[in-house]
Length: 93
Image 1 (spheres, rainbow, N blue to C red):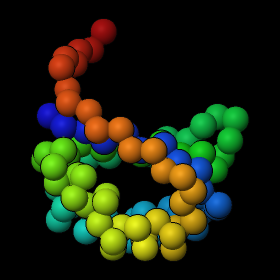
Image 2: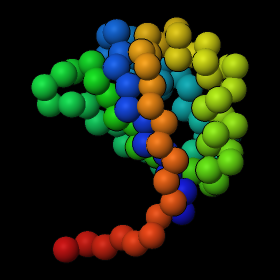
Image 3: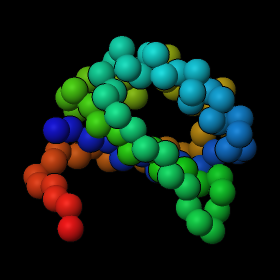
């Protein structure tokens, strides 16, 4: 399984969330299979988006596309950090 971890600040969480939700169909079409949105306890506008993708190649193509650059601007995203990950092991304790 391939995953993407994105950490970024947003200007306003509610505004960001509306844009994020509106982009669900294009994220799915691009290869996102599941996601979690988390926020820092000490900073409500610092967001973590953790998602599973069909492939890292598809995720990179999507996140680096001019379309997504524009969507991030509309959503008020500041300085996103993208971390591309491949699963090695998972378990439940």
